[in-house]
Image (cartoon, rainbow, N blue to C red; front, top):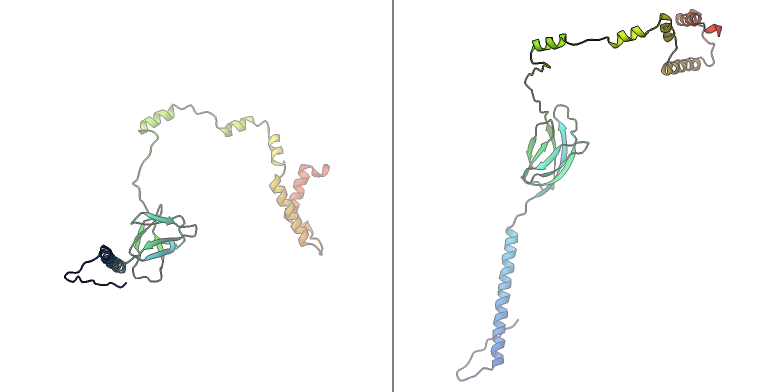
Length: 235
C-alpha cells in the first residue's frame, strides 16, 4: 500500500475529498499496525505456553506374595479421582499427565500410590504394581448363649428331653427278618452300573484269549456262597 504525503503550501487550498482520503489512509495504517502487534503478541504467548505431557499409562496389578493377577482392582488419578478398573487378567490402561499420582486399591489389600515420571518422550508408560494383603487381627471375644453358668444350668435341667430319632427308629423295627431283607435287597443304581462296567472291562481285556477260570478267586467263591444263601439258584 502506497501513501502520499501532501504538504500544504501557503496560500493553497485543499478539497474536501482529498482530506477524507488522507484520514482514511491514516486510519487504515493504524488498524494494520494494531493487527500486526496483536498477532505478534499472540504468537509470542503461544510460544511461551508449554503443554503438559499426556501419557497412556498401562500395566498389571498383581498380588505381592504370589504374583498372580488381581482382577477388578481400582486404578485412578488422585488429582481428579477419575480412573479405571483392571480386567480379569489384572490389566489396566488410562491416560494421565506427567507428574500425576495414581492410586491402586482393592478390597482386602493395602492401597499403593505411584508417580508418573516426567521426561517421557514416547507417550507411553508401562508399570507393574504389587499389592500386599491387608491382614486385620481382631481381639479375642467370648460369646455365651446365657449370661451366667448358673442360668445355663437351671435352663438345661428344666428341659424335657425326649427320645431321639435313633431310639424311635429302633422301636419301630418289627423284627430281624425285615432288617435282613433290607440288607440283601441288592445294589443301588450306581453300584449296578459300576459292576456292569467292570464286567465289560474284563470281557474287553479277554478278547481273543481264553477266559480266566475263577476257581481260585476268593471273591468269586464269596459271591457264589452269597447267591446260594439268598436262594438265587432256586428262581
